[in-house]
Length: 113
Image (cartoon, rainbow, N blue to C red; front, top):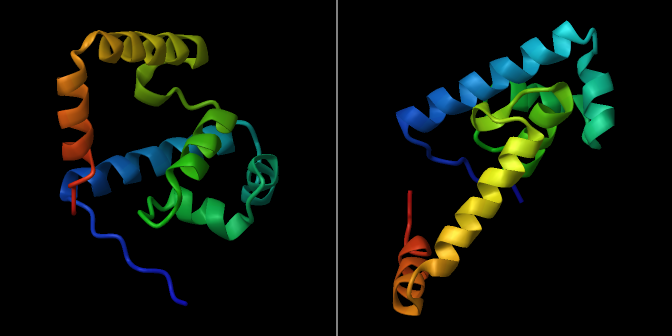
């Protein structure tokens, strides 16, 4: 079954392109080939090429794994800072009333791009 093309906004395309170029630059600075970085994250070189090209069809986990492995700081945060930001976000969400969390969860599921 062929993969369905993912429709993305202009801003999303721009963000994917930026992430892809950051991954490629970090990989080249380390002197790694696409095959080497791909092997480190458990994908084939073709998938890594798609990450570097900013393809919206690559799983976000794969793109983030490539970025972290190559040394790209996502969201301007290093690993420890990113973990702290995640915990802060979880703590903030836990403080919301249950009704707000339930309403927000149902809204999150309604996003059709």
